[in-house]
Length: 38
Image (tube, rainbow, N blue to C red):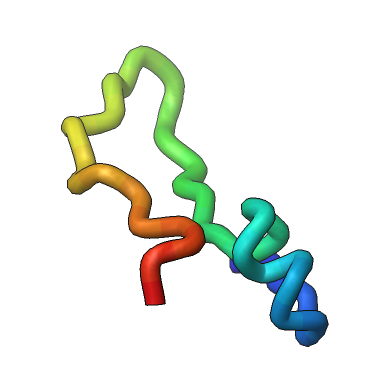
């Protein structure tokens, strides 16, 4: 997870998560991001 404490940056995509997968693994679909909708 990475994030920025400034509210403007948070709304502009500076907060999120990432996954590390093993070789040959495919990520499963996740829900749509809700950036900017508080």
